View 1 (spheres, helix red, strand yellow):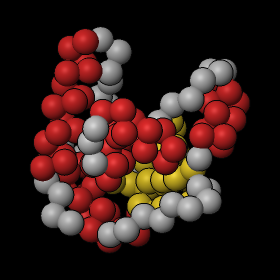
View 2 (cartoon, rainbow, N blue to C red):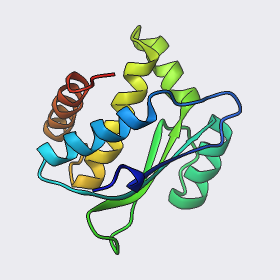
View 3 (tube, rainbow, N blue to C red):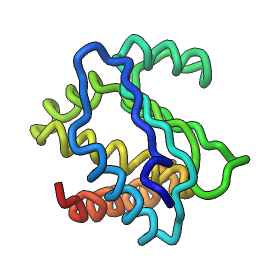
View 4 (cartoon, rainbow, N blue to C red):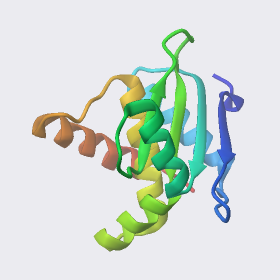
Length: 142
């Protein structure tokens, strides 16, 4: 359960993630509360253009999204790649009149919750997912 099991990469031209060590600790702690152990997570923070290409290439979707999650079922623990569009999270935060970092952290939690096994296809699933995200946000200490 080493914090190095979580890596951050940046394709976005201006974005830099602050508090990386604290975010890693937060992810490990919240996953543990869900009964999960982090195996290997790779986050790529990108722009809308990169996200649109990935959405088309991997899911055959021709639209923008804030996050794409690709599980690695062959790995031990919770593992996979999580692509996050910084542009989408900023726009969503603006639309919702919330702090952009809160929205970014919510999307991080959302991706990990998907890897743990939570879904958001039905209204009930969406409500559960939102409650989990809200709880995770209260657990931040940075």
